[in-house]
Image 1 (spheres, protein in one colour):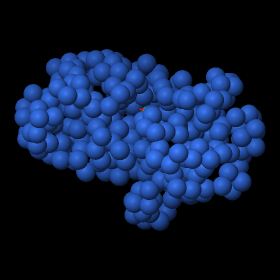
Image 2 (spheres, helix red, strand yellow):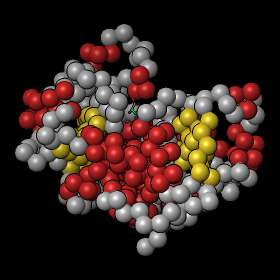
Image 3 (cartoon, rainbow, N blue to C red):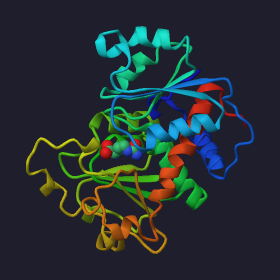
Length: 308
Ligand SMILES: NC(=O)NCCC[C@H](N)C(=O)O
């Protein structure tokens, strides 16, 4: 059993292998049921449309049985420790897919049972399986990531942090994080990017849209209020002026072959216009499909290992 709690735990070749497997699943390449007889728990403390359903559906397609837990259904809510929960659930389950209000460190405590593979399906600070779905979408579309330039626009939230770490593990991919001042990817994540890559990466951080060195190959955005939670500053919207992905932004920083990605859910008209989200350059809906192929590749890697 192997956890997938942070992309920082993966070696570059492991990430590449998981993405390649997800691309295979995207071609409908599921010959057998590698998780037959396995039990996968899905424990979500926060709302989810894509991640919970895609893990559930993906696990079932791989032959596993799935049990789901709502936010208040485990004794964690009544004070049982995270470690004790892990020790017990490890005796029933092979994997536990978790979305919490906590950080990666809390998830690591849940991942202490050697018999239970814990998968981070979004923590406060990172969304690793989203980044795997994103790299899968880009790899499927472009054939390879080498030489491509991904522009990540908006709040430096859990998806942005995961993409920064993905950039550290994929030095052949250029990743520019364009986040408004005060809403950037945390410095701890950027330090981790340096550490993981030994300084050999193409992850850059800017706060002014005029600083984008385009045309880029992919423009990615995410809703501005992470998990729909209102921001503390009543004037926060002012900081995001110029960050909406509309036709003008797309034409200024993209080209005829540039694609658009969004982790969804979208707040239409805010971080992206309908024209772009539904337009011919949008891969956002295919990207949503790859939530499932990524989930399948991650579960297979965690529980039985990927075959070469
Ligand atoms: N695709 C997803 O997993 N969406 C969940 C929300 C992620 C998004 N960045 C948000 O925090 O709003």
